Amino acid sequence: MKPIFILNGPNLNLIGEREPEIYGVATLAGIEQSLREQAAKEELEIVFRQTNHEGALVDWIQEARHAASALILNAGAYTHTSVAVLDALRALSLPVVEVHLSNIYKRESFRHRSFVSPAVTGVICGFGARSYKLALAAIVEILESSASATRGLHA
Ligand code: DQA
Image 1 (cartoon, rainbow, N blue to C red):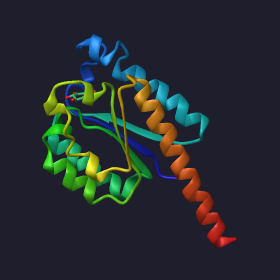
Image 2 (cartoon, rainbow, N blue to C red; image 1 turned 120 degrees about the vertical axis):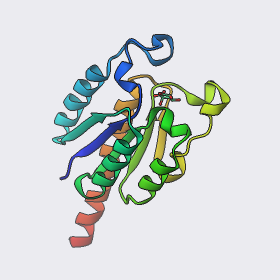
Image 3 (tube, rainbow, N blue to C red; image 1 turned 135 degrees about the vertical axis):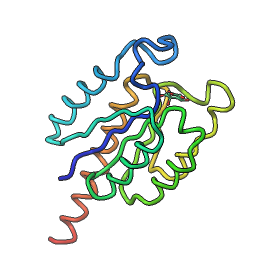
Image 4 (cartoon, rainbow, N blue to C red; image 1 turned 180 degrees about the vertical axis):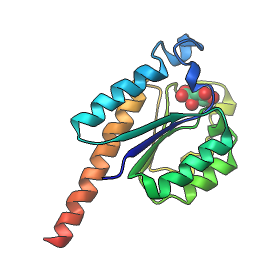
C-alpha cells in the first residue's frame, strides 16, 4: 500500500504558538507524532509535510498522483485563495480529505469560501488537532472498503 500523504500549507508550522485560542496548543510536530502512531496501528505509512509556499504544495499534490494512496490536506490560507491548488487536486484520482483545525464557517466571511472543497471527498473542520485524527480514520475506512470491494471482484 502506498503511503497516505498529509500536506500542510502556510503558517501551520507555527501552530501551538500562533493564535492558540483559535488553533489550540498542539504543535504540528505533536500532531505528526500522534498520526504516525494512529497509522502504525493500521499498518499504514504516512508522509507528513508542511510548506509556506504555494508552488511546493502544488508539486506535492502532483507527486501524490502516483506516490500516495490518499491525501489529507490542510492548505491553510491557500484554501481561500488558490486556483492552482484546486487545479492540482482536480488532477488527482485519490480519496482526499480537506481538514482545518478551526471551524472556518464560524470565522471571518472570507474563510467561508474554500477553493479546495469542490475537488475533495469530504471536509473535516473545527475539531482542533482532532480534525486530523478524524480525517485519518475516514481515510482508513475508505481504503478498507475499497480494498474489500476489490477483493469481492476477484473472489
Ligand atoms: C486553517 C484555517 C485557515 O482559514 C487559516 O488560514 C489557516 C488554518 C485551519 O486549520 O483552521 O492557516 O486552515
